[in-house]
Image (cartoon, rainbow, N blue to C red; front, top):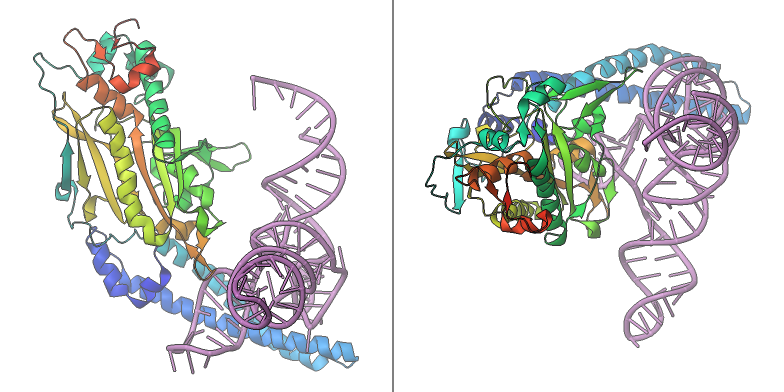
Length: 428
RNA sequence: GGAGAGGUGGCAGAGUGGUCGAAUGUACCUGACUCGAAAUCAGGCGAUGUCGCAAGGCAUCCGUGGGUUCGAAUCCCACCCUCUCCGCCA
């Protein structure tokens, strides 16, 4: 959520900056809502003040044992108008809030302006794509030849866009999560958390998935009619740890790392990446979350992105780092770096991590605050990034570490997790 | 699922219809004392919203949502959550 004062006082500037994201802010609609709000709210509060004064007078008269009938008559003249004003205000405010809740964050000034992913700016490339002296296979062929990737059975059990893994591939999948967790906790100072995978609507609203993106979520209706959602990312439960909290300043930054499955309905992406594990309804991810002091959040974004890069570097996977342009950023982000890993079979870089600073956008929705130098509550800044998406890391390892015989060389840093084995072969 | 207890400010904890946004303690801030600190003493200290150039005013907030009333932390209804015990269960 944007700061409401920014909308009131600098509406043209807000509209201009949102326009760089390709979002048209209906300023006339906002001004109309704001004018109505201002009138109804001040009017209601005036009437309430009058009522309070009169009611207090009744108390004084009763205490003295004097008659209060005259005051009662005066109050009753007020009450109908007060009631009407309160009702009108109560009717308006949800409309006002709904209008503001779907306005995306303002891009940071360092974000390049562009209308879609073609406007993104490459920041760096790391590693060099390996030269193969044989025909490369993609992860689907590699996985199925090894007997470890089985999409047909997953469809039978569940539906399309789900995967079944067996043997060495399943183990690699598990090991990757553990390797990443170990790295972030032991080297980067994150605290590991384990969280619910089903969350309430308030949490989804806090991080910005609701109200605008409900169709992207899996929704679970309980027998009593209440609703929970499957998390689309650990960002949701982990960031909501600080919802409605006031954090002691010396505790900042809070740094959490969390491995969860993620569930996305992928509505609207029919036909995209239908082959293989790139785009699934369920995938695992190790997520990094930081709750930062507002003065430190920009440094924290660089740091957090570096933590995600460290995983790719340790696995010796070539990647590039991309600064997303205004038109390609997510709803709540002020700035986002994507990390894209090299996939030889696709002969291209594909997103494997997305690291963003939300500034106070989520914190304002969540009422997540800390005590500042003046001992007053102030909104924190929130950041998160994938460190990394497990499914896509698995894909990258299969494709980048494949051998001519179809086996997979296990990256050196992972061998300890495989009892020292150097390869994944069929049946293992 | 059944029975009981409870949800009040950062924390603890009083308050059962009227100057209660709320005693008191603690934490925190300022000052005095001290070489400095501790202890002690004095003062200050909730949040959100809103109006205002500002000083400041006003409104709302005692788990949540309704209701009764001129007036609700306090009375009524519903719901949520926590704790204890019993039952069931990974």
